[in-house]
Image 1 (tube, rainbow, N blue to C red):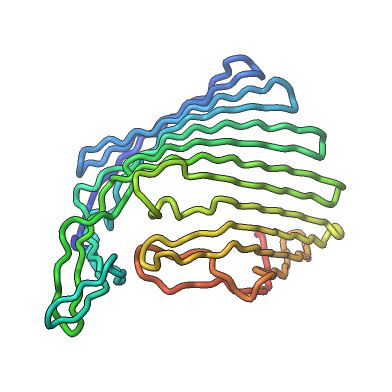
Image 2 (image 1 turned 180 degrees about the horizontal axis):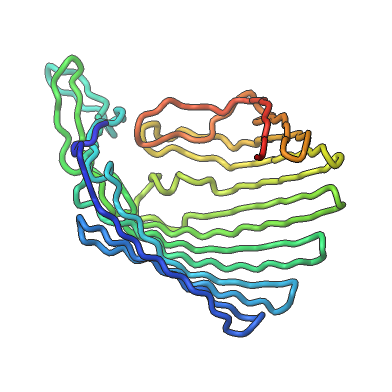
Length: 322
């Protein structure tokens, strides 16, 4: 991969303002925010706005709603990248006289100088309740609408390339043509059974409701549908602290250069034992990924990359605060 424009310059000016208004003291509050970016090179104005309404009927409950609009401008790579991606199988092998059977095609990725902007319209709702001095819960629901998302689509007919191994090359161009809708809910709970022991659990569920692309795409395969976490901390003594973090993630699937490969659902467990040696010095021993020797968590797509697995690890850490 390479970027054709080796020298590029764009001035960016940003203006941000936010205000908080007490509509009804100690009951209703409104927060408004806005940001405007000015890119001199393109004279493009990219506004982003947010409004948040908070209602606190009493000291133990609060409800909130938030609407926001975000904009992402193109990166330098999206406008000027050039290079080839790993070969992918043709839907049907092609047999050519004198050349044999050609079964693969090599995508050639080209940036787009006119790459547009990506837009997000977000709606969030939440309710937080403190049931007792030691137990609180929160539920948050969201619906996100993404428009003009990045998508690499064929920009011409495949070209036959002669060489040691004849093959087809498919020009591919980046553009903002994809749309997606995402809905989800997140549940969290915090509990302190004793003065020295605390627990925190969360469960996130999300669903891709609509996409303009048939099948798997970069956006739809980037986030697991279910994530569960459980954290706990226990003060063994005034100077000795034990912490643990258990996590679960549902499966993920690739969409590009290794189509159909699955990243299996997995559990991970991290632990830490910390000793407060003095007011300014803490020494900890940390264990990571204690349930597996190694496991795969993500695959970088669509660019070719080495598959990296997370291994079990143990290390010693010292924090000294001046």
